[in-house]
Image (cartoon, helix red, strand yellow):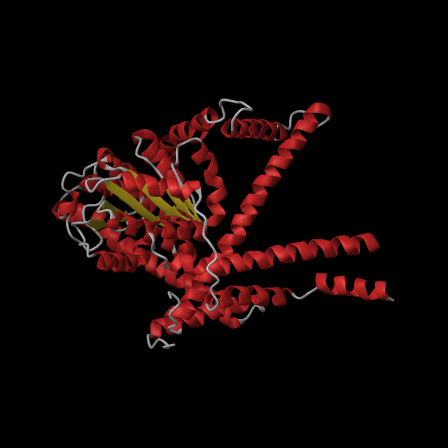
Amino acid sequence: MAEEIKKTFWERLIQIDRRVIYLIIALAMVLPFFFQMGLPIPITKEVKDIYDYIETLTPSDVVILSADFDPSVSPELLPMFDAIFRHCLKNNIKIIAMSLYIQGPGLIAPVIQEAATDYQKINGVDYVFMPWVIGWHIVIMDLMTDLQRSFPTDFYGTRTEDLPMLDGVKNYENYDLIVPFTGASSYAWWLLYAHEPYGVPLAAGVTAVSAADLYPYIQSGQIMGMLGGLKGAAEYETLIGEKRMATMGMEAQNWAHVIIILFIVIGNIGYLVIGKKK
Amino acid sequence: MHISMNPWVWIGVFFTFSVLSFLYKDNPFYKLAEHVTVGVSIGYGLVIWWTNSVIPRFYIPVFEQGQWILIIPAILGLMMVLRIVPKYSWLSRYAICFSVGAGSGMAIPRSMQAQVLRQLEATMLNLSFTSGAGINNIIIFFGVLTVLVYFFFSKEHKGVFGGVAKVGIWFLMIGFGATFGYTVMARLSLFIGRVLFVLQDFLGINLAG
């Protein structure tokens, strides 16, 4: 009798409606926003390497931050862009903010504006914001050889040659780091058309889905470091001491992972129990 | 709590819940959100393409600065569009030929250098059992070797060869496991983005503290 009840329990558990699982995961992700436990965010080497490199840059150095993404992946990539942009502003490093994706500039414009206001930096003087231009590989190749040919005007329509920050910034010789943020493979475009031919140091911020693909390039030394998913962004926020969008989401992410691992374990136990009885 | 009075935020919340309602079951709200996303994306893209590309990169240089050479790529572009006119669709092949030729010419040598030769170089490592890095190098070396053996299909996977291929499968499974773990993390992050939007932007709850 007892055996029959146990069997029914596991069978019922295995056949549970998927919507119940969605609901449990949703609760596990919403509640941590109200009941923060302050779980630690350990820093990985891939993130620390980018941070350390930017720390070595001086105010005369130029960093290209390319937001190569659209709204579908912005919850992961926008916090990364925000964190590195803020780090560069904090250290007075010159920034060229741009996007190879048509929807990119619209997404980063408010983030740039907010960070610039917080750090009291001026567009055109401390950083420049470029518009989307068609033809990603042509844009990268032009940028490496002649910045003005690539971007005749900035996002706001000001002629590039009139931007004080770009005085003396002409081509690859003047770039000290490129960081593409991508949910696809734009890091490979930058690798092919900027890093390999011209040797400009390359790092990347990628969605968690793409993160595993980057390890071969990190191991080979072609990409110096990586921010992988929301976790990477939260690590960077911790490093710069500004707990913002990504850090807020990490607690929810941790709890959801615990629930999913629990489901996987329970599901497998149920599968084994039912399998043995059959 | 201070609910937003911005109509765009309300529209965002409506579409957020419309998309999430698909988790319960397919419904007209989800369909509406799906169609609006496609329509808005194309409309937005077309406007930006026209203002950022066609006007400053074609119209102004040709008609105001007299750079008539740009007419040639413009004609090639028009030929590409002719794919939608059955009678003249053959013309698009010339544009495609040019595009494929130029694209391959630019990409192949660079891909060979960056993604084949440099990656090969990265597997030629100092193998040793005396340090952590040396042991890592041994794992990388055997991982690459066994996976390559697994993908060699001209010889039956039997005996020693089959055993090595099986080790390759284990390396692949570990790789897929890492990718799957990261994928779960990515999907959850997207949901977190929406939760933050609803809680902060719509309901006005201060979560920063």
